[in-house]
Length: 193
Image (cartoon, rainbow, N blue to C red; front, side, top):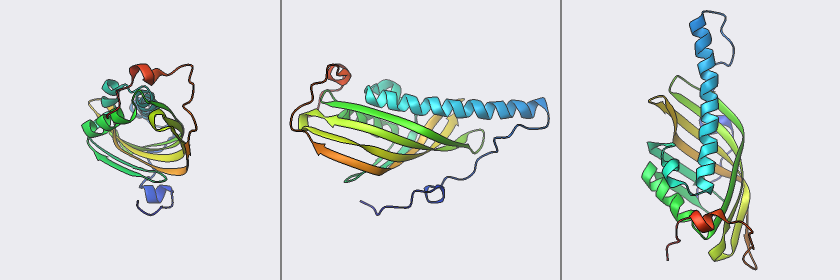
């Protein structure tokens, strides 16, 4: 795995976006200001939909959230995951979020920068829990995500997504948890044998 980097905006390639200040000019400038706020909200909804689709293995909807050429680079405690393209990433999620998995991923504290009418970046703070039941294993921790988004045909899409763990704890489970509800147990993909 690559060496740990300092997780600051400069090292992550996050630059200042367009100002979040109401224009003093024309109605058209005010409309542009309102559109930027609507774009920020659309990016928030996009990222929240991403985590919902991951945790429910909703692969069909998940695929609609990515640019075709999405790049993925995730760094954890003992792994580094690099993928290229929407199909490769969605297939990989399908292999991970099986009937033998339970996932809970929440993104908080978005720092969204609108760079232009069609490009934006964001930082997100992740808190997650992941159980791999057939291996009696649980991972939990936090990570810092940094993403780049492109607006294509009026819709924001995830173009690049990265994370690096702030902390990660991996625990072997002495016994299989007794979940009273297990959504992926019904709707997840069958694990590969």
